[in-house]
Length: 116
Image (cartoon, rainbow, N blue to C red; front, side, top):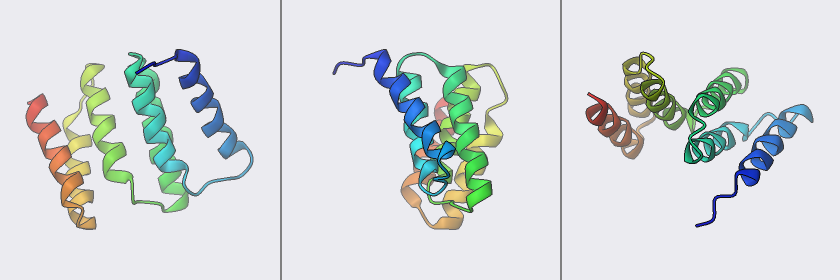
C-alpha cells in the first residue's frame, strides 16, 4: 500500500476545515483516522494531539460512539511517548463496557495487556 505523506497532511487539513466551517458532529471518528494515519508515518506526538482534539470535540458535542477507540489510541501513543498510559486504557475499557461494545473493550484490554 502506498502511504504518501502528503495524503496524511491533506487528511489533517480536511478534518480541520470541518471544524472551521462549523461541522462539529462526526468529527470525532475522523480524528481517530487522522491519528492512525499520523501513526503510520511515525508522527506519534501529532497522533496523540489528534486524539486529544477528538476527545475535546466529544466533550463539546456529546458524541461518544467512538470514544473508547480514541482513548485506546491515546493510551498507545502515551506509552510510545513515555507518558502515563494506563489511565487512558482503563478509561477506554470502562467507557466501552458502559456502551456495551464488547469488541472495543476487548481491543483496549488487549492493548493494556500488551503494554504491561
